[in-house]
Image (cartoon, rainbow over all chains, first blue to last red; front, top):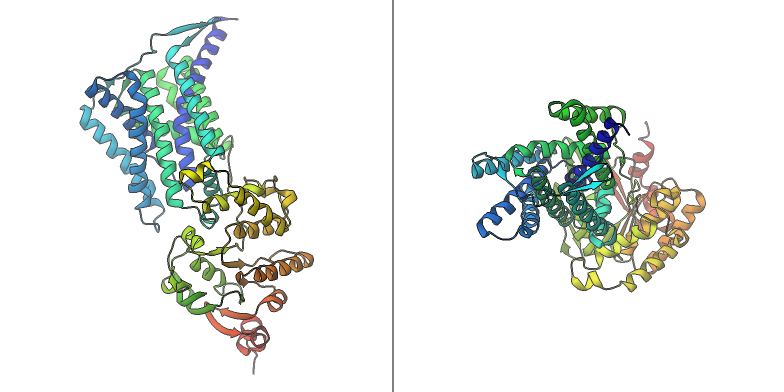
Length: 293
Length: 246
């Protein structure tokens, strides 16, 4: 195998593993869209808020690193609920654009809180797996990316069980297919929406810790890229489709790492957005596009 | 049983329903008819909480349920089907009914989460049999034939065991044999103690099963009474056929 081929496969491996974090963010966007038919642009910053809270608690308590996940999950779940209340439940129903604009406002509000709390400076984030490297044949497997992939896989497994094996999952699927009929089957839309925001917030908390750990730092500058990449992932996969968000996230990760290798960091995001336009023009429904029946 | 008092609904500049009064007695079949756009489906949507009325009250057994969320209206005892079919297309026939059953079974309580709902399973089986869908239980709802989808809508509504069933054009798109089957099913439901409001364009069906008929035109009630009398009402004829030129 030539050096070029080896490098391409190495980037493919890295991108595939890192893409699992995009998949988690994309799941958040797509689940909320699936249930409410609306975008929550504050989801990326919800994930970041969870990771920052975990870092804060770790600093204050000097506790073990194992605290990061439960604190981030709890905090992001709570932020998710607040976003649901402020940006959706309390918004007048007669103005369909109001929730979208409210989530834009919430994105910048939480971002500002983080900027004030950190003076806008990046903060080091624990990366216990950062030094771990494993040889897989001629390729290197980064420990942090491998860990990211395994945790993401675990989260997806839990989510699959929740969606396909529980009463809440059945209610969520029915609301995403026929919201009015679901209510007339006795399902409370308010409860399902709140549950979805809390659950997706918790998933965001996990993604926030994984991304902070892989990057080795947290910065308020991460909030916009997380938002945009979550949206791109959801669109690539097909809005409303959880399997789509998973495949979309992995695809986005691979494309980014290959673009990084071939064109350099300055062009990486341009390739990402080009991919978005290509999908919107040639396959607007995404890979697993769903229609409401 | 179900009382609609001075119910009005305005959508922007359009008055869809105007001060409609309607009493539905226990265990009767009330036919609600009228030309297209006369406000029949809007009334169903107002009663079941899909829309909030601009004015007026809805009472079920004297209990004011005006503006309640749809899931609370169902819990109070009113179920409905839809004029345009709204099934959970990506779920199986069985799951469509299971959704309705689970929502009734006290979601959120630990016992409800852990217990196997055998009574619910039996009920779903019986309902599927009643609607002649038992052999299609594992089929995705979206793959059913049109007539089967209509039957599934009814089955899903009946799973929650509502006292009052609002049927919004259940015969639309059905063939003669299917309409006859539907008629028998409606009459059986009455025998089982249900109170039924039948919104329908298929006059033969309405005249056969309804004990009383109310007629709407341009959002207003223009006639009410036994089918034969309503059929002869001059205003009803005008609403359907147009005014005679003198």
